[in-house]
Image (cartoon, rainbow, N blue to C red; front, side, top):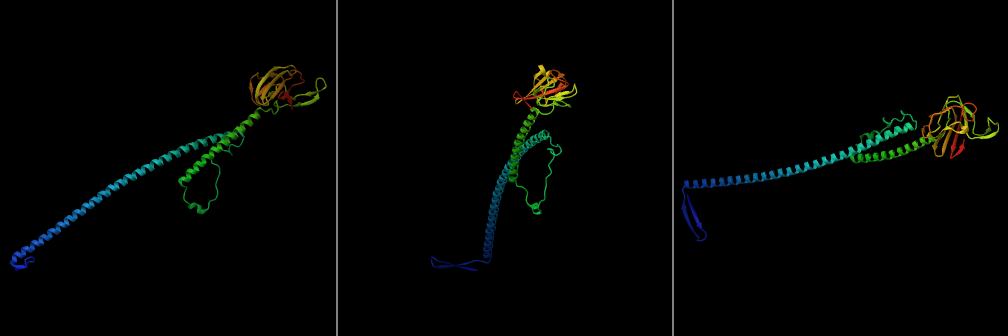
Length: 304
């Protein structure tokens, strides 16, 4: 095989004779070189691509790790927040339970003070409540946390308000009960009857018209004489025409006297309750027959 080589700069040409074997080896060399370059390029591309992929994978892994750590922090903060909210709700619940216990005790006292039916006003059972519900309402979503907290706060305020009002009612009932205890009412004897009224009458001993400053209650000798109201004994002993006299001061200007007793059963300074036995019915002093002369004085003046 003959190769013609032309020189562009000199404008000359030369001929080179190449054998078939040499051409074969040259072609083989060129082929091997091309394959080597291709293989090398492919290896480089693969290594580069793998490197980039590994780099991306490593970066993605680090990013995922950072995201996982961030999500863990968020979850931990949410858990701590939920725990704090739960602790706050538990504290609020304990406060409400204490309020309810106080209201139960207060309600029980009010029921007893007002003489209401303990079965009808039982503070340890749930009161009867209820009513129909529209079918569509049953499919509505449940209460939200914000709504629950608002309802809880509203309930707490209502309990506080009810507690104050019930306490005021208890104070009022106690005052009324105290007034009822110290206000003179009723009969000073168990049994017996009225033998002489308050006001002008014919004196049983002189027959003259005189003013009777009390009410006489006749009865069987030895019967019990009782206090018509709570108070403090300010006199217990003989007192001229009264005979054996018990005098009780009830406050607010009220004083009661129980005269002609066979025997006094209380001493000066002693506290007596309403209905307490303070003497034995008799006929001492200026008296005809067994009876108790009962007087009520208000600010020192005898009243009916």
